[in-house]
Length: 229
Image (tube, rainbow, N blue to C red):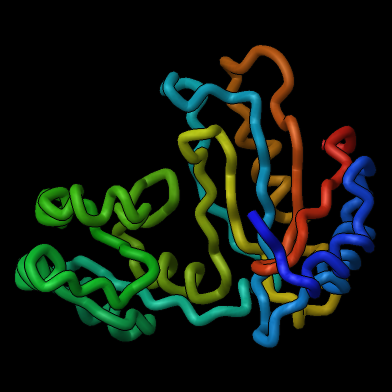
């Protein structure tokens, strides 16, 4: 992949052979962000897990203390009193059965997170083929299948992010924006790493965290010292 001049200049600031301490890595990511927009700061964690085995799967959620810096649109599947509760808590869209054809046939996807009450999962299950591949399927482990829709919505709006293994057993998550102060990015990164370390599957033999890389959307990757975790 060919990179432009700006990227190449930015890359010179990063020594690929070094695993930096988190604070230094964050500082470098801010320095090497080259885009004209406010880039997202992402963490990529390569694990020693084998996601093909259920007992080595990792999935969960963590509320970043300083949020993600982006506005998250929440869709809630609910009925009865829970509809009013979801609307009062600030859900962007609330509905039930009537949303199925809109999502299935019209390709409507104007939302970033889906929350559902347990009694609506039968309805939501019919959207598995659409929501599943996009990582939007509600899940009890991530706190998105719950009767407490108000808490779920407020956590998500406050900066709750989901983490899970991809097919290559890597976790990709945002921890803020380049415009955040370094201390706020550090707090978010620490909260994420604490959750990931706690999520280590007991069935795993061998090294859990193989590499941690921090990067902005368009900038070069900066390796973080894994030994600490």
